[in-house]
Length: 180
Image 1 (spheres, rainbow, N blue to C red):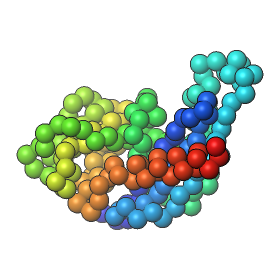
Image 2 (image 1 turned 180 degrees about the horizontal axis):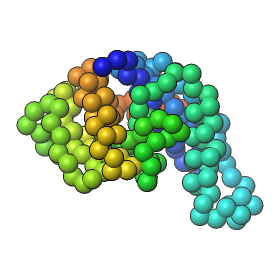
Image 3 (image 1 turned 120 degrees about the vertical axis):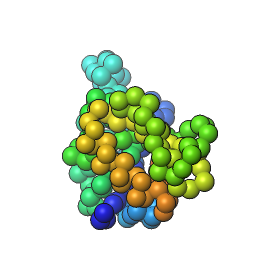
Image 4 (image 1 turned 30 degrees about the vertical axis):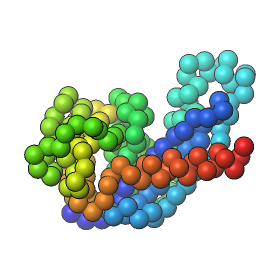
């Protein structure tokens, strides 16, 4: 199908602040690029002025936008672990985005099998001997969903598609430790 680089976006919150990381891997999970932000800690004035919109503003307008400006490698899709990061949209920046999570569901009958749960949610059985993964889309666009599923189906025999998110989170925690 072509070259499929995957973008893994993770934002962690700690000590009233946020830190974002973005890793792009090749289709076997080898990192091609990794960027992260400095911790963003809002002031008391910002907390008052932005109110409930502060968290969304910091994540989308400060962290995600700055990370996307820095990348040089174009991802086929962006993967997050929190569906709220992509709710009501199908893209992060100009890239297709999905939330992918491990499940404790029993394995589906065959690798590559899918089960539709909702119009924006699919259970997918990877090719490795693992439990199925949950894929959540921001919008119910069948064309986008099919495109993303084809990429995931092509890549899943080569790698655990969720595991790089764990690496990004560990790297961000190391950054926090250095700052403390």
